[in-house]
Image (cartoon, rainbow, N blue to C red; front, top):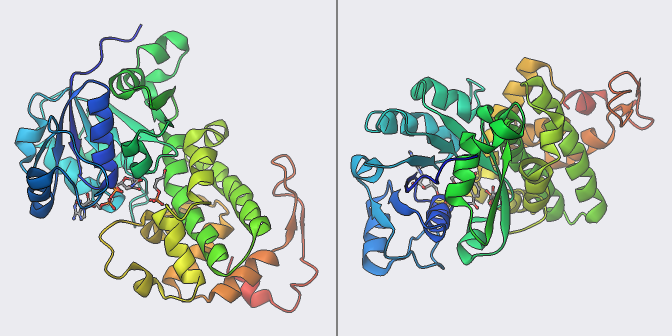
Length: 367
Ligand SMILES: NC(=O)c1ccc[n+]([C@@H]2O[C@H](COP(=O)([O-])OP(=O)(O)OC[C@H]3O[C@@H](n4cnc5c(N)ncnc54)[C@H](O)[C@@H]3O)[C@@H](O)[C@H]2O)c1
Ligand SMILES: O=P(O)(O)OC[C@H](O)CO
């Protein structure tokens, strides 16, 4: 059986998701402290109990919000890391310097580190050596979680592997008990890699779906992008040692479906703005909130190339965002790729030239 829930929870990162998770832990009965990087966030919460990153939901008075990292993590039994992916390394290092030994961390950033191609769990292992760690991911818009809408997520830790007994005494199980409440339902997984890949790649695919929406495309293209995007996600998860099955769960298809079909998603909305004619710079201008896929299109495709994994939709998004490929050319290149088998058993053995691609090898080569 799992042990008693972790009592005091420290949340590092007071963006929308960190704030919603702090509220979740508070609803679950934990004592909660929240670290904010920006002085104006600390001041706004002190003044009117509202965070500009999630302004519509009051923060309960019992949640202590501070910019003092040592004070926030003092006596914590669990630390939740919720800064954007490209800042996780620096934050993990800073937290490690002030956190008591043995206190577990749960990673909530969705992404892959640019250039190194490292997963968030690799970064934490490097910067917080020997510290127990888990990953939390799944379909969870911060605003809906803050509102108390029913939400299900996956929490994964390696020690959950080995059967029911291992799973129920794992770190993932302890975190589920610490954070679960009547509206927030976490599930245990033993596949952190599969869970992480789902969260990182779905943001890139959401940009692709947003672009299609911005172009005025309908439901057929969206369904095609989600389904073939899922195939890309499965391939990358497997190449990294995760399981294809994990990708069919909340942190894979669950999050993919959510993010690829709602203007609530920052990534979908960013893609939509591109499809409507904005440049990436224009679409991101003045935004304080993060669209992880904009950076992670690069890190995901870098990693896929290194591993020899075919991810044509992610490649197309990356080429649009970072290599100046026009959206029109990217769409044409995707649609005229060679004909392949859909199923895993035949893939990649059946490859036929696309009937309309004979005269367009240049665009085709790009994806
Ligand atoms: N918002 C959601 O609905 C949601 C849900 C699930 C997962 N996530 C993931 O959570 C992570 C955090 O996203 P968010 O939505 O809370 O952020 P946000 O867009 O609401 O806010 C931006 C965050 O980035 C932080 N930041 C900016 N520069 C920084 C720096 N140099 N160092 C450290 N932190 C810095 C800010 O302090 C702020 O916390 C992302 O990986 C995101 O994909 C978000
Ligand atoms: O708004 P997005 O696109 O960052 O998506 C937020 C969450 O990741 C949804 O699960």
